[in-house]
Length: 76
Image (tube, rainbow, N blue to C red; front, side, top):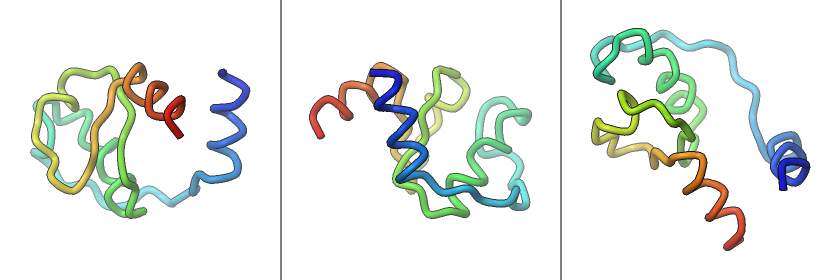
């Protein structure tokens, strides 16, 4: 399963430059930098186990735990 995940990230993922970080997006300001590239690249979602990123309602991003992401991969 991990090999499949890595291969899909390699073939379907996008590498983007670090965009300007908008402060106050997450409960922990040190985590805001993780949301910025997801938004800048137009990502459909963000995978994290960090509760400070899972908690806020980010209307433009689907925030998933690793388990939720793997479950969706299994459904694909």
